[in-house]
Length: 395
Image (cartoon, rainbow, N blue to C red; front, side):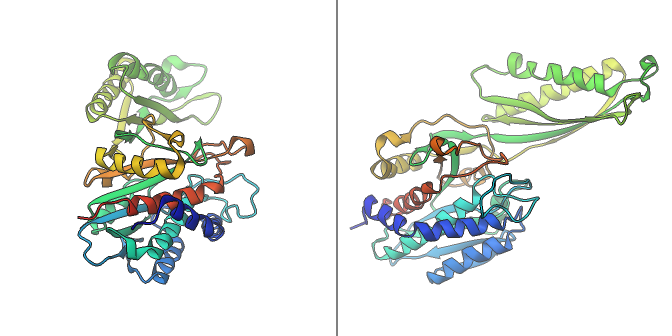
C-alpha cells in the first residue's frame, strides 16, 4: 500500500529544517549558466547518500540519479534547475548572496533543495514504489541554448515515460499550486536591432539621418502588430527592453541599438510577429534614409502540459493541499521555460508552487532584486514531488 499524502507531508515536515539549510547554502553561493559545479556536487552527494545510480556531467554540468524498483516497467522523472541569475540581490538576509553579481532571484535554489528532499522521502518508502524514478538536476535554465536541451541530447530522458517540474511563484500564496492543460509557458524570442543613420551636429539635424528619431518611430509603431495584426484573443507580448544611442547633448549619433523580446504561445502567431516586425523596420528606415541590421533569436519552445499528466497532478495534489488550494486552470504565462524541450518530447506537466506571503511582505516577483520565498512552501513542494511518484500506476 502506498504512503498517504498525509504520510508524505509529515515526512517532508520532518526534514524541513534540513531542506531549508540546503536551500540557504545554495542561495548564499549562487552559480550561473552551466557553471554550477558546486551546486551539482551538493545534489550528487545527496543522491549518493541514498545509494542511487548517479551520473554526473550530463549536458556539461547536469546530473541524473535513478532509483529502480524490482519489476518496474515505467519511469517517472522529476526535474529541478540549479542556476542563478546574473544580477545583484538587495535583501538583508543573513544567507544573502555572497557574490555581488549573481543571485538566486528566481528560486532555483528552492527547486534543487525540494528535489533533494523528495528523493529522501521517495527512497524512505522505496519498498512501496510503483515505478522507477529519475531525478534530474539541470544547469542553465535562464539563458539560451538552455541546459534542458543539452541534457536531452546527452540521454537524460531516455527510458523516461513522463516528466514533472515546478516553479515557485510569489503571486500564489504558500500552500497553493496553479497549472493548466495545453500551452502554459510561452516561447521567449529576443531581437537586437542596429539602426544606422548619419551623424552630425545637434544644431543642424537636416544634414544628418537621426537614428534616435528613426528608432523612436519604430518603437512607437511596433505595438500596432499586437493591437492591429494579431488576433486579440491570442496571448502575445512585444516589449522593448533596451534603447542605446548617443554620447553628448550636441551630437546626433551614427547608430541606435534597440533590444526587445517577443512572447507567444502559438507558433503561427510567432511567425506573424516576426514577419511584421521586420517589415515595419524596413519601411521606417527606408522612409528616413537609414539602414538597419536585425538579429532575431528564437527562444525555448512553448511548455505544453499534457492532459494525462495534468489530471495526475490534480488527483494527487487535491488530497495534499485541499481542493481550494489547487488553482485550475491557472492562466497561461508568457515567461519562458526550457522545460518546454522536455514537454515537446514526452508527456509532461509543469506547475507553479505558491511561495508568497503577503502578511510577511513576500510579494516581489521572480527576477526582482528583492525576490524572496516563504520557506514554508518547501515541504509542500517536497511532498508534492513524492506524491506524484507514489500515485502513479505501475505498468
